[in-house]
Length: 320
Ligand code: A3P
Image (cartoon, rainbow, N blue to C red; front, side, top):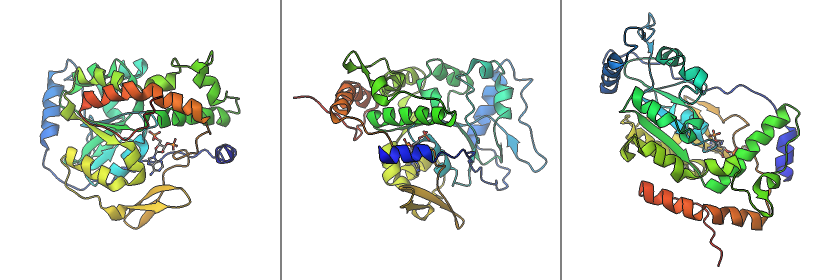
């Protein structure tokens, strides 16, 4: 709790910077780009869409990969780590194209305009963690590109709830607004408050079912967010393979920073950690309440494991 409060006092607002690597020249069009071009031709807006070509040969184009979530799963760490690869061009901020009606109404040209300039051999990536839990999004992404490669980073659902609470708590602190304690959200009438939004976002199998209506499992790569925290390189290697990228990210691109308590990035001799809003201390929660939370997630987690044919090392307390 002390660390949590200390962190709250040390609030400093800083912009988040996602480096988009300077691109290297190449004239070869990748197969995913030609597929994308074909798909765009089929859209009703085909005559209106422009890829905004720069005089240096780079252009803005629709993403071929999206990090769809989950909120507080480690999405920023994943994007920044993946951006170490020279063939990745990442959108700087969260675009919220498919989940915000105001943005979606603007159409695909607006979406293209939010993308970084990239060279033909590069894969454009955007991340909007809210996509994973927004019911309309899977169909909308499918309508844009059926062959989209999706990245989903998940972490222990109970830990994710605490992280979710912590983020909103800090947002309120920044605006000098009071915010209730986590217990006030987690308990209702002496029971676990399963209506708490943060709990719903951690019911991964429900959201995953929506995505699997539109995309086959082999188009959705799940990154283990807990492993990415403890040892990022093997998780990033798997992402490189999934995206069919040449293996260019190395173990030496990561080093553990004792002060931060997390892995940080090393790129061409430059070292940097994620923004201070990533890796905050969580509030201390009463052990019995935490056990209730673990117990509540036991069945949903099992359903999720069955759905994706894979297990994760998440807390799963079952009362005896
Ligand atoms: P906490 O701040 O609760 O610890 P997102 O980017 O999706 O909002 O996820 C934020 C989470 O990323 C952080 O949650 C943190 O645990 C996790 N994370 C993973 N790798 C990290 C890293 N190298 N540095 C900082 N945070 C990291």
